[in-house]
Image 1 (cartoon, rainbow, N blue to C red):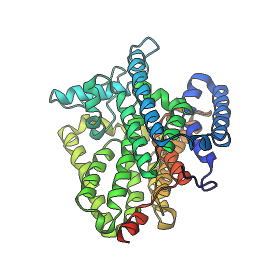
Image 2: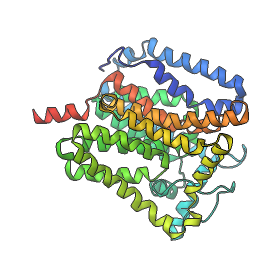
Image 3: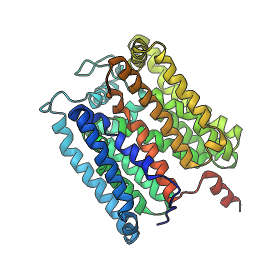
Length: 395
């Protein structure tokens, strides 16, 4: 199990994992709980890398690591199958309605009705864009939409094991995410779609980088991957800010024309999925209620609602410079930074407006956590970039 010691700081990975649970620990434990978790979380990640876990993992046969990964995912699926109905029963409070939004929308879609006309049991509009609805549809039909989180987490582990040629780092990352990020585990078990949403966008980006990062842009396989990316991007508008970063990588590995073509296909698929729903009933197209959230930020700090997404796009364009976006790990790191800016900026504005720490928007931390964690893992254990794969193919 190759490891490039010193090539990536474990503290960046630690911050990703610890911050993913700041909202939950603040909500249920106050500032004391937040501080305690931060210390425990940082110490746990430090122990992971200083306690020789990686060296011990090298003694584990690869085949056994693959079986252990499958077993861990099966146990997670079984746990979700038990925990999700309990969390959804209302016995422990009203909980979140993000899962209800997906189930309700799926029910309306299957009945041939406009999925955004109704509200959840908490009276909230259905906020995910159509891409999320269609990708969650199979799991809604199964009766447990929380299982989509396990499915996409399993695909992440499989993709990482394939990229590194070794299932052992994938097993370690999966265990770290489940054991050292209780906020993520809570969202997985209770059916929040943040985990699945982040992961299918990440995996779609990765697939386009892999298939499209070849001379000429990779042909039909890359085009199909770009269309799939468009479906993934048609989930939440914040992920559109990641497109310049991907196009920068593709321009470096496949050429500007190929990058433009694949980017256009992704945008075409995204627009082709979203626009029919919007044009059907613009007044009830609930995902655009995000503009009200931005207006709320502007009410707290004039101009903040426009400044935050504009600065996120500016940050993405700055990070897209070839020397800052030079390989796959850098691409995922930059994706994490852009999404983290949106979360941190929102938290800062709300805290200034409230006159005290306000971490409601930190619940969106998963939008950057998986990108950041994967960037660190690829840097630490090594993975070939698209350009090096192309060079190997040409040789």
